[in-house]
Image (cartoon, rainbow over all chains, first blue to last red; front, side):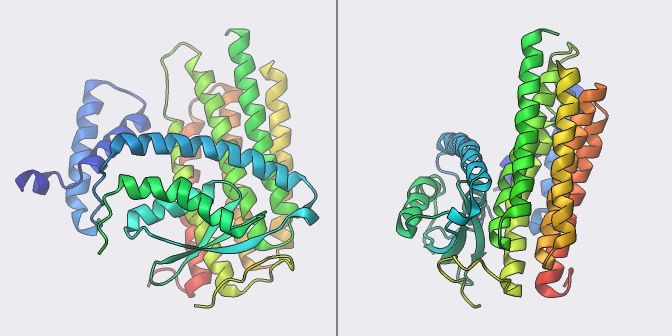
Length: 167
Length: 110
Length: 89
């Protein structure tokens, strides 16, 4: 348990180190050391404020998922550009409610962000019991198909990656 | 500098600024707030993304070492854009803004 | 080629800024105005990066990053003010 006490969030430390190296734009030994020091000290000092992150079961799968999302973002932008430049009388906006299976805070945040960044949808609100996500879509043909697509394409991989224990 | 690198930089710059323009057009001409929300959150973010990639290629090709620190801007925008969009959407829902008549489905009352 | 493309891009970005500004003035509601301000700062980042390439200088990166951070905080603070009538509870 001592390792856990002295290095509470290994992933956060690694991210801080990387961000520091990018920020100073210099990969000399001194900056590696300074970055490592920052990556160690900041999580230690701010330990109290962090929520417990969920366990990542399949890191590789998460990386692949992010790459796919990045591709989707580019495609989404082309679609939205087409919708915006086309005649706006043809748009069929709608509010859609999507029931959520995810329960973890971080995973939910990720899903909501991904929904905001991908095809014609913006996540607008989360119900108080965190069971339903309200999504606004710019041009929707069939609500059920949209719900199915989001659940299948984005929620299922996240469920698989994070070991979400149903509480 | 090779001419094809220059062409690549020019391509990304044009793509980025066109995306930003599309976002601004969307903000200007779509009929209601929730539809206007779509333009800036997506297109503008990718617009900055295109500029940053062009900048990466340009400064990388000048020969004084590769520099990746522009990526931080894109990373930061990709994390923050959905958050601010979500905050704005919540504020708009609470203020009960007028929706376009064609909008199907109604937001709930909480 | 870049000598022609960069001024063209500056012009396109300028047009985008003018459209956003029109929305900022027109409103009609508060969230619309905040959204326009949000778009303005993101476009300003793009403009700064473009300007950095034009002058061939690395210095503008820091300014762009700072605008990104401050702009986000600003948007969230104003949105929160609309939502709750208070920023820090």
